[in-house]
Length: 167
Image (cartoon, rainbow, N blue to C red; front, side):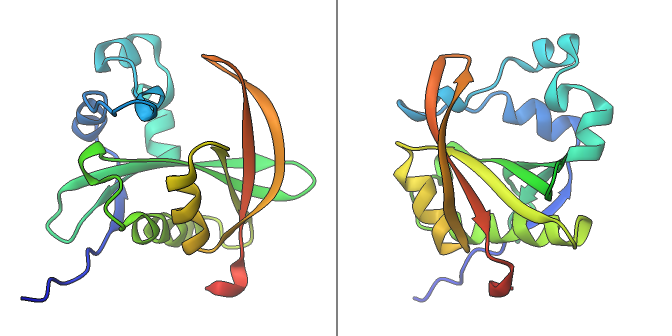
């Protein structure tokens, strides 16, 4: 039997989606990508715990059966080059199954709809080769390496930029 490929698409992130995402637990070393509890996110009004930020910057990524598969943040940066920076997370049960590039492609599609003239980039920890492979397959290239502060100390990152000519 031939299984059909997963088809991902973006929808507005609901509070129910956000609450569900806060329950996801990743295996080490990916456990650094977990969130605070939904109650803490809401009380602190941070990230998708803030209804305005959730509405303006976050989307939920669903599959063809409308099951929640992940999320993305599309954060507009206004510097010398107008950019939209992606932040994203896939459901832990779906990670490492070879569909990451399809997942990222759905996020790129949404970013291009919202910000058609902006460059699209993302940051990734240099050790996360699984994510880097998916990003490369979706059309990103490493353009810079640097260190920046995280909740776990200063860590090395790559900046990866999407090649719009692939669209």
